[in-house]
Structures are given as C-alpha cells and as structure tokens.
Image 1: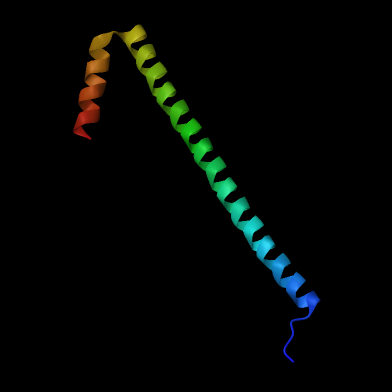
Image 2 (image 1 turned 90 degrees about the vertical axis):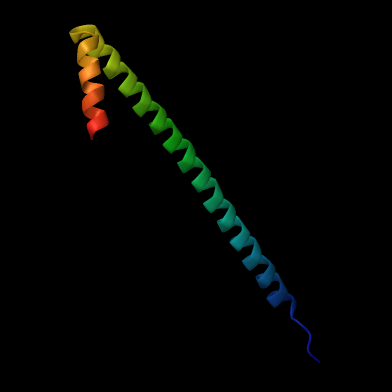
Length: 74
C-alpha cells in the first residue's frame, strides 16, 4: 500500500505556499525598486532644468549656447 501520509501532504502544501509567497515578495520588491528609480530620474531632470535656468539667469543666454555646444562636442 502506497498511501501518502497526511503529514507529508500538508508539508508539501506548505512548501508550495511558502514558495508562492517568496515569489510574490520578490515581484513586489522589484516593483518598488522601479518606482524609486523613476522618482530619481525625475529629480535628475528637474535638477538639470533648474541648473539651466540659473545659468541663463545669471550669465545670459550666450553662456547657455556655449555650454550646449561644448556638450554636443562630447
């Protein structure tokens, strides 16, 4: 008689649910990381915008043109 004991069946079911919970945790963590990266990218773009406005405000538009030409040569 090859009957599966109840304890083995319960342990197998628990193992699958632990694996499923771990997989869900990994997916949630990855989603949070992507949200965080998109927030950082937005802050970098805003910083570049503010820097450009500050340069133009302090030194005039000709300085911005020179900076853009220098960046294009890189």
